Image (cartoon, rainbow, N blue to C red):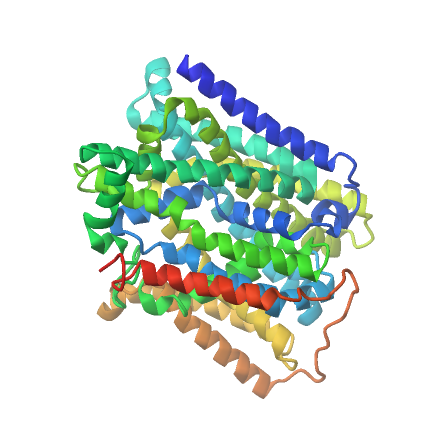
Length: 552
């Protein structure tokens, strides 16, 4: 009976999101480039904020960040909280320039600023990262949750006589296939607006469902101490205060987040993710005007400060609740275990639907961005410059189908890698910094020549792999160095290389940013005051989870 009710509520909520998304987009023209890839440039601030949040917040964070928290406490909240800085910079420094150019993709700017070869180089790098890192990881992290909560692997054991290891692999594979199929429908046939609308609805569900996990977790923790919610809260706050300290020592390695990195390596990482990553900022490119884009970015920054309640606190609760566990490994089993144990059975269907929506939002957003980049940055300029918008939409849909299949095949094998968060972030660090450096210098240094990007990007990639996978094992002082220190160091090196190139071989004429007059560029009148408030809340969060307060 419980299983049937769970299945019905899961299907009902999932279907409700799909129906509302279809109803909201049923009259949209998806045969044009702006209509399909940029939602007709009509997105408002709240929709942009919801889509930004849901594209980022998925099972990858719920499983990965809580997996780090169960091992080390509140420190991983830095990945979330400090995102507010990058989103504020995006809103008021970069977004006016982005929307002025009328871009559809980030690589498009690289051609305007550098040359066609740079555009293709950046496009290939980004596509490769989406196909072999982001998409498979999103599918795998989501499958982890479903398999653990519903015991899907046990079905393979009892029905097919598999051993535990094989059963888990094939259970994860089955969930990955189902998720990819549903996500592809949104991304391939619905376009960006269908994704953004579904993200907004799923976002509300995730906030409600996600907050229920720490609430029921604290009730369970209280029960373990002979009481209820208040006893659980007291145990959370007082059992081990070191778990509530988010200020880590400078010399700690991952999964810790040393405090010097918060405004150095982590900031560079966040600036790429929130201000350069196509799968994220494509929502802001679809804004109705600059004001709405800025509202969406700042509002998303505010919500990112609150997300540790959902993606870090449950990990700490699991650490305090399951005292019998002495080795959490990479920690990725903690969140699914907690959900399966504390969530009431009658709520599991709704929670599963919310989780499914979170996975879909990330998967279909990344898939839509991959299709956008291939169609507009690779296929059209290289193979069919005179293609119509309708034809390019079809090309993007076909490419999205191929990418979905490839990433689905790869996804189950992520179970053999390290922790989810570390795997993704350390892999991205190989190329995210030089792309951000090239974009930053391209906007603000008028004499950077076209050759600069082709020099900086490969040098950075080689140096990063040299540091991360060779020198750190040859030089004792580097062996336990956090990879974000490498990011901070190489950011400085990249900027020095850029400065040398400009000095030795400057562009002959100043670069002028062309105004495409795509949208109204009137800024949000009181936006900077709201942004200052958001940044003050960010600082307050670190005061609360520090030795000055709860982490004493």
